[in-house]
Length: 309
Image (cartoon, rainbow, N blue to C red):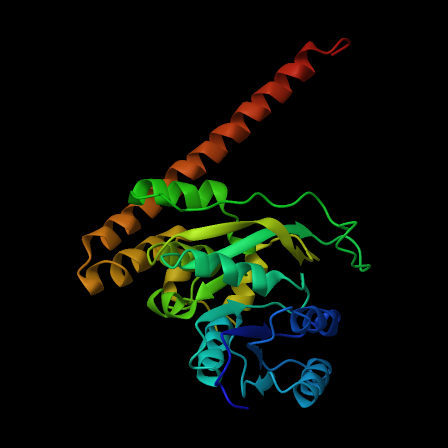
């Protein structure tokens, strides 16, 4: 497969989830723009995943399938997906991570490419999205929940305001599946070996340029299980947890931003960005705790005032 002529490349980390892989690939390969490649990086899954992936690689010249010799874990396989995708298509201007269970609208790549072309200063763009609640996909009837809120860092200048916008207006677990400028991902360190790495990569991407939202529902997210930090720890660190995994999750994030985007590049703004990220996480945690306490007090007050209590 030649990497020439591809304007975008997708890197899909795979691991033991064959149930919806074929449907996800069908939707991705049905894009109205066809100048893209798809690199499937299998993190030592069972044979059911490999069988599906090899079939697509054999029938579509845009698809490449590779299998890791040993399991890397969630974060390292996401990083591997970026590395291999950009090696397969080294001239691709845009990059996106993909999933093995979600659905792309046919205009996903067309709309996000147009947004980035119209805003050359932007580092990435992502669309409105909804949660998939049915296997019957019909974009006209939208078999999904209310679309996720859309955020943007366009026009945000201070590190403090940028950290606040990322926390309050952009859902990392959704936005991370947007379309990036490949060079921006490279400068942001791709995907670091930490918990909740999607939050960190978006914070580092935001240091490269604005994150833009496209006001159109173009992606359906299939949520099969609620988030669980213990499960993420096992997925990220199958070889055992590094020492910093015992810290509160945002401390390694803030340190990475301050070092990689600041001190290492002699950029005072990067150091300020790390400090702002930490401050926003602390204040956000206090807000959540206070909000929970107020709700508990209100609930207790209602119980005490109910007749017969």
